[in-house]
Image (cartoon, rainbow, N blue to C red):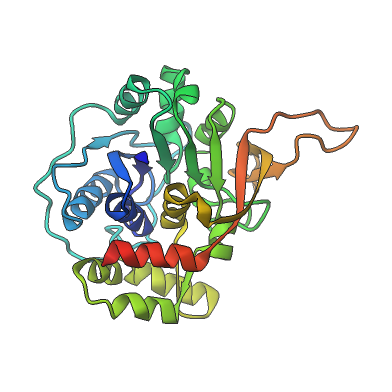
Length: 312
């Protein structure tokens, strides 16, 4: 698979990059950075440091994209520590970002070879929305658009109604879901069902004692503390790397359904909510066109084994 990853690089975003670089049969064509988890320039450095840690320095170009959401202001999160890497103090990477804007890089790479490249969007969808607004043909030229975002009509992780990526830029999410992409949606609901590592799994990774398992241990420290405080047991959540795993190996998907996904942009309580429903709800509802395939469950063990292989 040939993959572009659009990321707000912090914590689990980095493991997704590692999977894309270290999984046989996968080619990470580019990393594009978008507004999101931590201050923008730090996200760029986190992406570059991850590429260097994987031994791919100079082989995967990194492009800088949107530094703010389309409409409303945004504040960085401390979910992954102030630097997005749990204070791991990784050395400054030798590789530097490219001069081309991420939106232009996405358009150029996709339109050069229509139908050949998948995009994994694991950040707010600002870069993707700007790209399709500038060049609408990319919606049909991208082979698949794998999106980590939203919930499947369930509780969010930043508000009771919203998942972080869609909450930060719901206007961008709405544009993307209405643009005609071939979307596979991996939600926070899926993460809570299939993307958690328990204490035994974490200890198994730590015991590997490889440079990348140590990278994982350091970078995951603050999110693990946050997850344990929130959910009451030692664990780690992996929304982005789970999405990357099912993109690279769709056989991990255990169940999925075609659905209409609509994004709330105006609600005082529900801003960023993703309404997931069938195309026809009854005589009182208009008929909508299916715009996404929503993954409902995936193999946790298969995902775990892919992560271990990447860290080996």
